Image 1 (cartoon, rainbow, N blue to C red):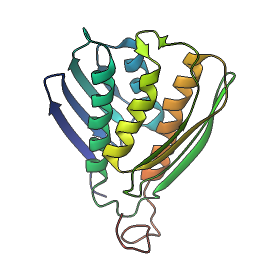
Image 2 (image 1 turned 180 degrees about the vertical axis):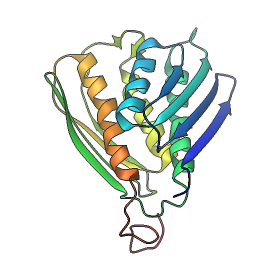
Image 3 (image 1 turned 90 degrees about the vertical axis):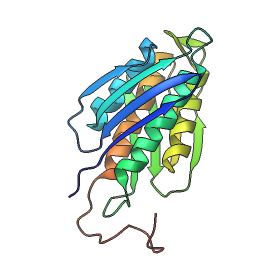
Image 4 (image 1 turned 120 degrees about the vertical axis):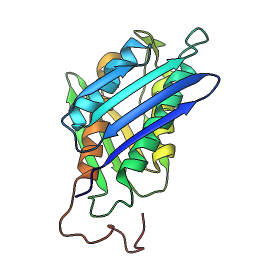
Length: 196
């Protein structure tokens, strides 16, 4: 099987970002965005998805966290899309119910090429550490549209905001890992259209 590795850079007046992603990694990571809790979430994504991930971002954090988080989502989504190539012989779908203490999060996704985000989570604090909680939605929106995936994230239960967020990133990682796995019974792509 071909290596499924991508390196994507994006530079604007607001952010300068490089993401390196290996979909067939071992969960190794180096993450530096300037937002501690966001780094923690991306590290959890890499570790629990068994993706090798390197993220560096210099953003206009003197403004707020918005540009950094959204733009990292854009670049990560592009890296996922590039690493998948033509999506030959992948399982395409992934889903999990992931618990973290009192929190339970459902994540289901389809690497269909058609972007869509259904996000049903409720945060009761404006920030977790130095991450604005409203940006969790915007991060997943950016990843979804840049990667071209259909993503559903639904909070089933949970009262601790940290647990809800962490369960979401880990659930996304596990569902994505399932979706990108090789399916030896499939020639080409898993679609009657012949294209994803």
